[in-house]
Length: 102
Image (cartoon, rainbow, N blue to C red):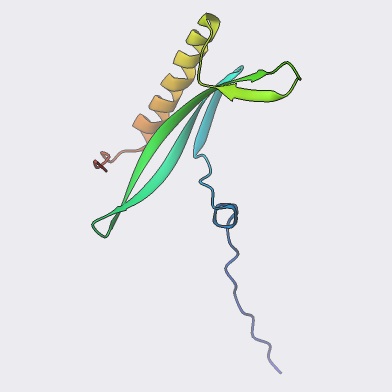
C-alpha cells in the first residue's frame, strides 16, 4: 500500500509571534541602525517600503541592558557610520523607487 505524504506549511517565527523581523542590522559598539521591510495595503494594493530605526544600548544602574535613541557626543561618529551603512545597503540593494505610502 502506497503512503501519501501530506505537505504542511510550517508557520514562520514572524507569523507565530506577530512580529516583523529586521532585514539587516548594522552595529558599531553600542550604536545600531536596523533596516525594516514593511507592507501596507492602500486601495487594495499592497505597497512595500523600508524604514531604518536607530538605537544606542547601555547598561543601567542595575546592570541590565537598556536602549535609547539619545546619543553622547562620542556616539555621533558611530551613529553616522551605521546610518551611512544602512543607507548604502538600501541604495545598492533596493533598485526600485519607493512608492509614497502617504
